[in-house]
Image 1: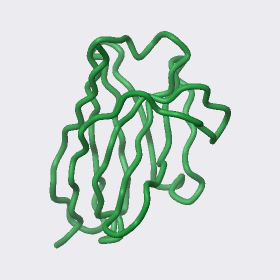
Image 2 (image 1 turned 135 degrees about the horizontal axis):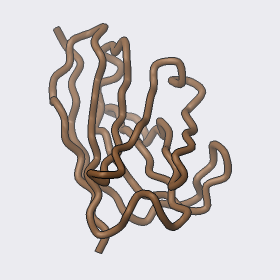
Image 3 (image 1 turned 90 degrees about the vertical axis):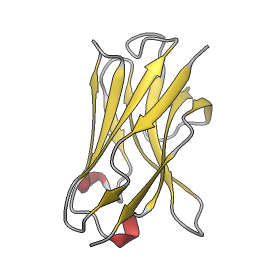
Image 4 (image 1 turned 90 degrees about the horizontal axis):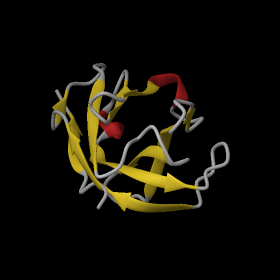
Length: 124
């Protein structure tokens, strides 16, 4: 069974870099044409896709946050990481990692496995 688990600090100060890691078990992130994604939900808002790293290491980012976003992976640990720089209180959200299928460029039509989500608050 595929399981994803987010980890990272729950509190980040404005202007700093938010860094979260998603640990994956039950499936290798290097195989199978899957796309390992980061998604967030801010208070009172819908889900916002931030980007993904594919099984082959390719990355795609939401154009609205692309300049501040980096997704990388450590295949030896079967983990992938989100870094979001220059954060503001508007980046306060629950952050999820998820596995996506059939992605074409910026579009991922479906997700089958999700982490439980981790709350990140941006505040001084």
